[in-house]
Image 1 (cartoon, rainbow, N blue to C red):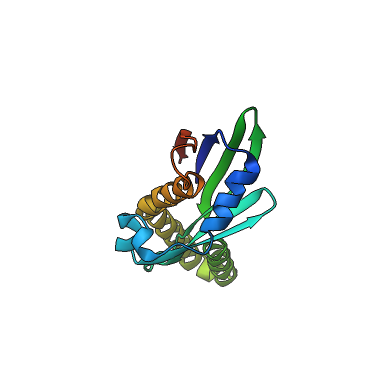
Image 2 (image 1 turned 135 degrees about the horizontal axis):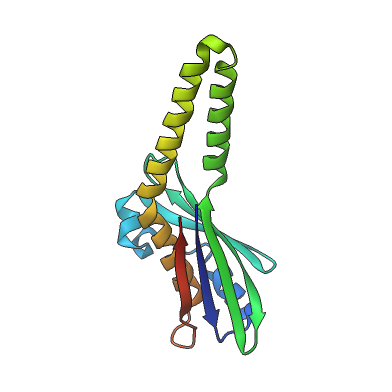
Length: 166
């Protein structure tokens, strides 16, 4: 389950990356979209390496699904294209894998198989519920990415498309 976004900008890739770097340490709680503040997030961590970047929310409530935005900036005739995907954070993936491994190990004896099956179904349900609950967080990350790329004002490009994939 991922949300994909593309932003086309008339700015050179180096300038778009510079804008992301400039915003990296400057996100304050008051600058976050209201839906993120309401969920308990207080900041955003932005890391830029080469033409790749990542955005990770800081803080937040108790939810098994924490989204992370990863993308890259590519040259385009007359500007650049920002392509990014919003997926589960590493912590979410590690937690899900460890939980599956636990239920798989517990279910090895045939007498524990029903418990193991129930645990795996429960884990899947929790993940699906967490994914659904985090929709405003994913939208907030898209909004933050747009704000960072367009931060210098009216010369920045407008998003070409943003599509969520289930």
